[in-house]
Image 1 (cartoon, one colour):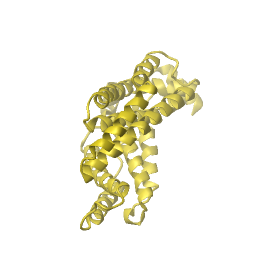
Image 2 (tube, rainbow, N blue to C red):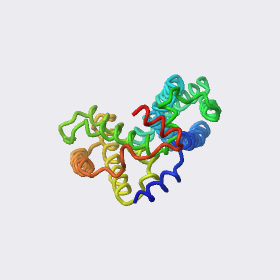
Image 3 (cartoon, rainbow, N blue to C red):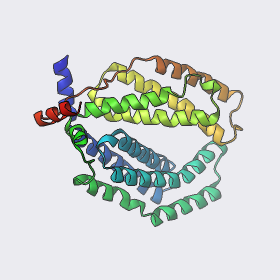
Image 4 (spheres, one colour):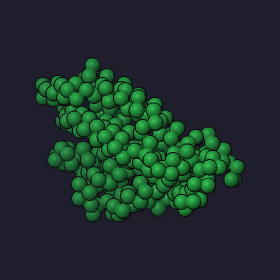
Amino acid sequence: MARDMEEKEAACGTAEAMLRQVAEECCSAFDAHLARLMETDDPEGPHKARVALRRLRTALMAFDPILAPKFARKSGRRARDLFRIIGDLRDADVRDDHRGKESERTDRIRQKVRKRLKKRKAVCFTPKLGKTLAGKGWTRGGRRAQVLAEAPAALIGGRALGDAWATCLSHGIDLEAMPDEARHELRKDLKTMRYTAEFFGPVWPGEPQETFLDRMKDLQDELGHLNDLAMLGGAEAGEGGDSRSLRKAGRIWAELAAMPVWWSEGAGRPATDEAAQASGAHG
């Protein structure tokens, strides 16, 4: 069992290497969907571009213990600003999907969003981020951060997953008792948990993780539907559709919250003997 864990940790590499890999994937996805947004009217462009930005911000939070504060703050703020700009177009696309096309209105919003993205030089965001990550200036100073950066990704991953899951559980289990705004906050925290789980999933593969992620996707679908209805003022709910979705989401959330965790907090060992000594000195 211990040998299997060591092999998984080795296959996933260090925290520093994993961050670079995750950031590269997020940046590539953002570039592709930003181009789609700028060049076509496909609603998947703004939707997937925002997903890529949210995933990137989640990665910055998960790996925060090894990131230079200024780098993390600046990159996170930039990603958040672009996310919000694109949000205007995403909201318009959602309205069109539920209420039918409002072509002129949506086109005006699309052109406005494109102009804002050009003004903010959105196309330059990921190349600059990639250039920074290729160097060394983005890592946090101090021995503890160095140990974490050089340790197997499982060490920082277990802690990130534990923190993200605790935040989700802090919302409580009774979805029906939550106002729309509270459910929306839970939905955002569940996205953070899901993306963090996907980042570190290779460290703890297996059926428990797969079941957890499958049920989380089901829950997010239901909560997303409820969020859309709330944004539209509830007029599109139909014959109790919102109540059915809420009850279904509540059942899934209760099931998820009761599942045993499939990751290990505190898993992983420093990648070098020197790091092990430093870890012991600071323990």
